[in-house]
Length: 223
Length: 85
Image (cartoon, rainbow over all chains, first blue to last red; front, side, top):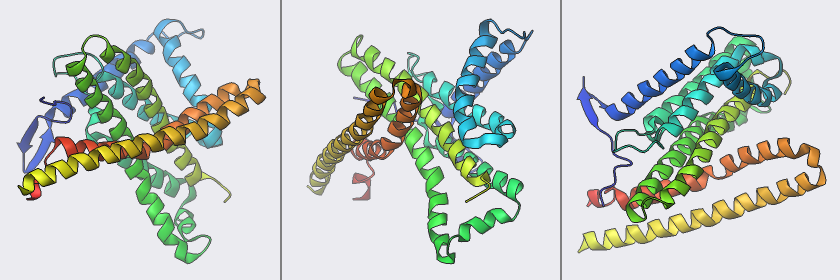
């Protein structure tokens, strides 16, 4: 059978190749998030109702989780972390809408997940440098100078595992969905779809909370 | 002739990888869930916090088996191995 799940519509421009379907879906995700944010912040009330209430509930639930790791720095970095969560959550669920090979999750492309993971790692380094100054580089050489190898391996493995975990979960979900649709349509894909909804939320949450934990370790005061 | 051997071996090894990944994911999750449920029955007021930490841990534990499944899928559905012939 022809498997559409991992293939991309590639366009060559300026010597580079672009996966156009991933780009279109990323823009669609951005549009959805902007529309939700716009309609949730019009006519804000002190006692929220409607869409504002829903968004505030999500922010409160996730925020309580993140405050435990970040403590006092939460207000500075909460926007970044909520951005990661909402973008990954909406991207994961976008590929589950049934469509004739039009809608696909942007996070099912390794480029997107690598971009997100590298963005989170680089922002953690920059935030660590800003909060602690050059003393941030000192922690690489503790407790002994030779430990710099282990710390460097850890810093490389963080974005790699973040990206591959998200990519593997979403692409495996899409491949199994397509397989089930070709083998036993109309009933089993629905069951797998419900499970994939849950996996989408969990993976977005895991990405966010891991980034928060790494950030908490980078800006922590004591060792 | 070599192509047939390479194809069959790669499909067989993909099955092996996927089976071992399934075993690893199931047993790893069972270890975590066993202790989480024990904690939840001992202190029902901590059930929410334990459940959240449980889901985070399962997301972490299942990351490597999922990478293994991706390797198995790549072996079967693309021609990375046959293309090297």
